[in-house]
Image (cartoon, rainbow, N blue to C red; front, side):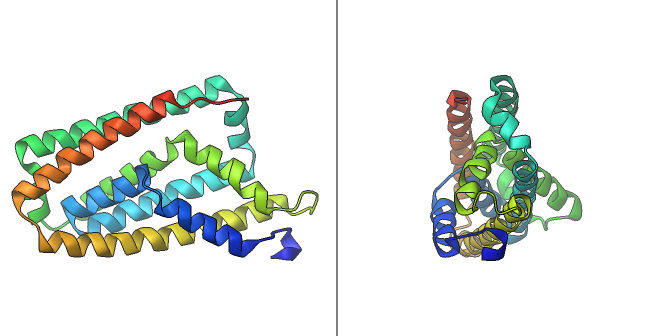
Length: 215
């Protein structure tokens, strides 16, 4: 790794783990989909979130995230789009809770079409979160030696490392959540969890709207 100008990889790994374990949009989305749709839905959500992280890694490596870090209007566009999408997801979850659709959906096997839908939602949930983009831009360079001549490759390597590590964490979370779901899978509980998830997504949307970029 030193040949690429990457240093303190152990510290990087530890920091990524702490960040993965901190509750946020990606974790909430993965857990909520696992609780309502089982481990297959959790897997789809995990893959979607990680695909979104791939987009952020490429953007940071090739300078697109830098534009958002210094441009208020670019940051605002992504911020409001992300908040609107979280609100849309929250409304859907609250409607399912009111109608009891979550319990009925959980009783049906996840089809390829619904798997793809959960995957797409995971991608958009992650991509439309400007905080994730700025995280990649601000965090990864701290472990890359300036002037090494391999900055772009180092960005991609560290981004890939963090994605694999994040995927492992989320998959472990899916396994635990799916096990808990089997222990307490009453229809009433599923409706309550969907309602709680909807309220939390609304709260996260509000926090995202309040985020500011400081050029």
